[in-house]
Length: 87
Picture 1: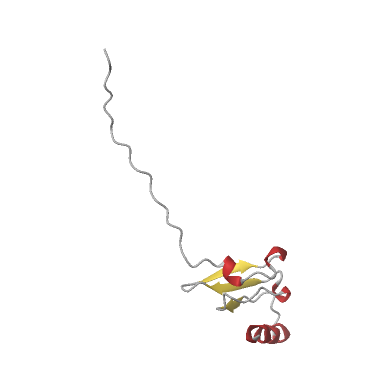
Picture 2: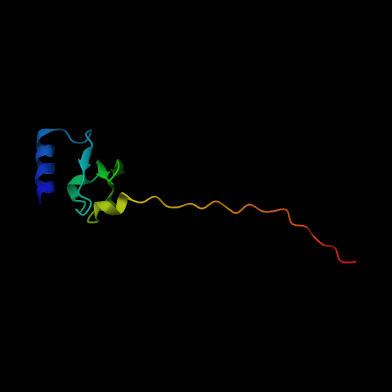
């Protein structure tokens, strides 16, 4: 509710189409007022930019700002294999 009030104040005072909104509340829903606007959602380290489209509405903001980095394992190196020929 607090987020909704602050966003409404910003929309009334400033032309918000150019301004990016910083949000730390990851469990808040994406409201229709955010449509076609850029949000900066905090993931615990940085603010990640998210451009809100119609499919994002009524989902949680945390769904689009990942907090963990996916682990990428390197491929094992192939060792030189000795082939034994049968006679």
